[in-house]
Image 1: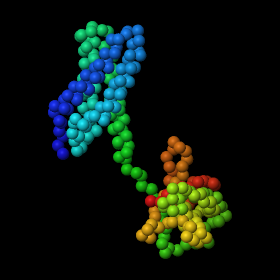
Image 2 (image 1 turned 45 degrees about the vertical axis):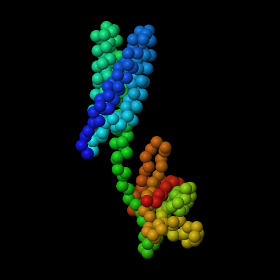
Image 3 (image 1 turned 90 degrees about the horizontal axis):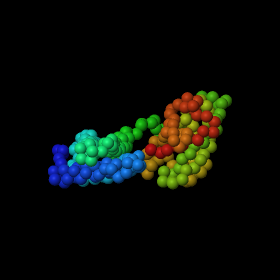
Image 4 (image 1 turned 90 degrees about the vertical axis):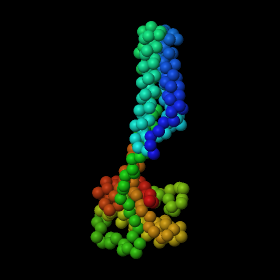
Length: 250
C-alpha cells in the first residue's frame, strides 16, 4: 500500500493541533508571578494533546505498510517543532516578552507517541523458546537402580489436574538430587494416575497427543519466570528443597 495523506483533512488536522499547542504555550502571559505553575500546566496540556494525537493521527493520515512508527513519529515531531517555533516567535516578535523559553512546554507532546511505539516494539518481541517435556506414550519407565537415592529433595509441583481447570493443585514429591526433572515428573504422573483412576492428571489432549510441559519457578512478582530444563537433574537445575515447581501444558 502506497503511503498517502488525505490532503485537506490531514493539513487541517496538523494546523489545528499546532494551533492548540501554541495556545497552551501562551499561558505564560497570564501572570508572571505564577510562571512555574503556568509552565507545568502548559506541559500537562501538551502531554494531553499528545495522547489525543496518538488516537487521532491515523484518522487523517494513511499509515504506510512499512516504517509506520517512524512515519508517525515524523508527523508528530513536525507538529511539536512548529508548535514550539510558533510559541517562541509570538513571545519574541509579537508580545515582546522575555519568557520565550515557554516554547519548551511542547516537549511532553511527543512522549505518548514514544511510549506507544516502545510498547508495540515490546509486544512484537517473540516469546523465548524453552524446552518442553512430553509424556513418552508407550515408553519405558526410568530405571531407579541407576539413580543415586542417597540424596533426596522434597519438591512441590503446582498445576491444574485437567487442561480446562481454572484452579491449580499442589502436589508433593520426593526427588532424588541426581534424577532428571522430566523423569521424576513421569514417575509422579504414573503413580498418581494409577492411584486415582478417572480423577487422575490429564497429560494428553482430545486426540490422544501428549501435551508439551514447561517447568518454571516464580521468584517474585517483579521478577521473570525461571524455567527449568526437564532433561537436567534437580542438582543441575539448581532446584532446592521445598521449591514450588509450576508445570504448564503447552
